Amino acid sequence: KMMNNIKNIGALTIKELFEKNLKIPPYQRPYSWEKEQVEDLIEDLLTAYKNEIEKYLIGNMIFHQEDLKEEINIVDGQQRIITLGLIIKILSNQEKYFNNFFNNEISILSSNKLIENYNLSKNRLKVDENLLNYILEKVIVTYIKTSSEDEAFVLFDSQNTRGRPLERKDLLKVHHLHHM
Image (tube, rainbow, N blue to C red; front, side, top):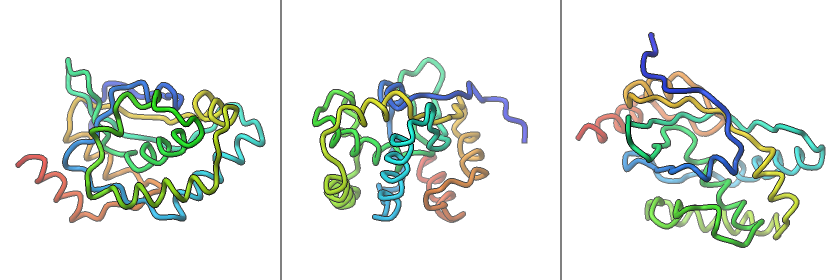
């Protein structure tokens, strides 16, 4: 399929990622990462940090940004971004990295999982300026940003992520919910 609406493809450090005006669109399913997925991410980050890996890639994300709009909708990558947010919050003990991302963006359906995974992460990590800086500066995500939402869904559908794959019916549900 021709991709005519890809705005850009690139890489961002985690610091740059959180500086963007990220939005979780209302059609997104709730935050649902399981304990194993959170532990895997923490383990991966700690291993990369210990081995001083210069650029550590934690996956690709898909964004949709309408022309002339500030905000960037997260089509794929929400679960990872939220989990990273929790980790950064624990490591820094400060709010400054979130430009209100957590204040208005998290569905109430997500709150139990959030609390659960926050506590889980808090047991594994403590305030650590060096690890925090490593994650912010050296850990990167790649992304594809489109100006067409439909195209973002096509990309999403064709990309297998490490997270829980959406079933076809979920994808359709998301798509229909959005158009309603």
